[in-house]
Amino acid sequence: MIPLAVAWLLRDLSQALSMGVLLVPDFFMLTVAYDIVSGPLGKERVSVLIWLSFAGGILWDFRWTATPGISGLVNSLAVLAIYTAWGRTPVAGRGVWLFALLAGMAHLLSGITHYIAWSVPTRAATRMLFAQQLLGIPVLAAACAVYLFRMKKSRV
Amino acid sequence: MTGKLNPVLVNSLLAAFCGLMLTWFSHTFPYPARMAADRINSMLYYPELPARELRFLVQAADQWMTERKNLQERALVLERENTALRTALQRSGVNPPQSAPGLLGASVTLRYPDAWWKEIRIDKGSSQGVVAGAPVLSEGFMIGRVSRAGEDYAWIELVTSSAFLLAAVVVDTWDLGVINGDDIGNVWLMYIPPEKEFSEGMLVSTALVGDYLPPGIPLGLIAGPGETKDGLTPFKVASGARLTQLYNVQILLPSEGGSS
Image (cartoon, rainbow over all chains, first blue to last red; front, side, top):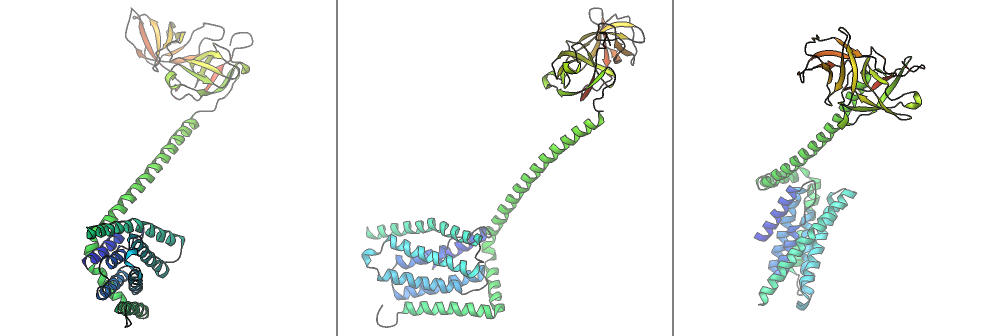
């Protein structure tokens, strides 16, 4: 809960800082993705994560968009997709690459949804989407590094 | 993932449905959605304050830099414009080169900064009848003489040059002396005995010295005595021409018979 709140606030503050210049990466969604794969895949735990991601999306919509609801919808579906893909993959196949793929897809989905739902599809908006996705790469890499570190630590 | 309904799936679909409903609701009834948005914005006002202030600071700094750059560029343009206007104004105050019988008008084409008081180049040369030694005038006063003449140009040695030596006479007293420059803009009447007294404003003109230099060409006015040295007193001569602003000059051409 606390890491999610911190990630949401970090994203919010970053967006307040860079408003009008760029769209910041979706730290919140990446943290949700990390939370799903880094702990046990308990249904209750994931259900809580679904509602937390939904709440985070709704808050984001109220703060930064005119039509609240879409981010909550996308976030909850993204959590379901990550949970399903991660859960159906054999334990041996669950690694940092799969995490990177799922988190990256969730981040891309979030960006594209915002692009379609709230921006006029101009060249400038497309550039902003690309910039957001590019900026998301180092954040994703950092999340992967943390994931690897945690995995190594748990094996020792 | 059992045969029963998966709670994750149920919760996820429920959340998605809620999101969809909220979207529909906020579209249909925008007022409550805006109220909620306002409430959340006011809650986030203080946490976001440092980020917002930092953004304003960066924007203000950027704007200041841009304005400064624009002002500097503008100042540069105005400075250039001002220089061009000054030059045009000075040029407009000077009559264009005019030729009269025996006088050939010429424009100054070069004046080296390091030889500012020594020589100038003009755009007339031997093809127009200019010969070495011919006196050069500006505003009715002699300002130098032709030192060498090319086909389409000539170099003039100025009266302010230390190499310039010319016999001159104080018109009111008929005392003779030698005109000489000092390379820093002054003209002196040299070799005057100390007992001679000239008053300011006395006219100094050329004495008869050669074929190309007729007597009686005004050189300047006595401006005052200098320091007596070796038993002789130099007198400062103020040229009647504006020696700092030489744009056009006149060359006194030799007459057909050999003298002007």
